[in-house]
Image (cartoon, rainbow, N blue to C red; front, side, top):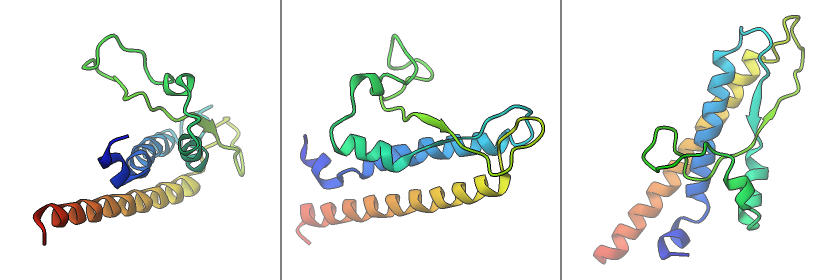
Length: 135
């Protein structure tokens, strides 16, 4: 583990997970009127704790798209969180389980947490700059 990994801790991973979760929630909102679409989400706390405990197995890391070259479109960095289906509060007749109000709330909450993580990383970078400059 490098010294930069120690400086940022799990915040780099948290930022990637928040980004993945934002994509999943945006997909839910985009498919709110698609018949039969099932709302999905990522259990952020469970995925983060599994990585903290060192349980990130190669099977879990290989859930991303298989690529033959790292510059191919869709190449992942090896970290793909498992998406889970959300239990609907009130399922619709067409089988769609997306509740737009719930999805918007979760999206906004995730966006705020994403910004908080970015702010923390920025403050760590500023601290490292000061230490390097000797300010």
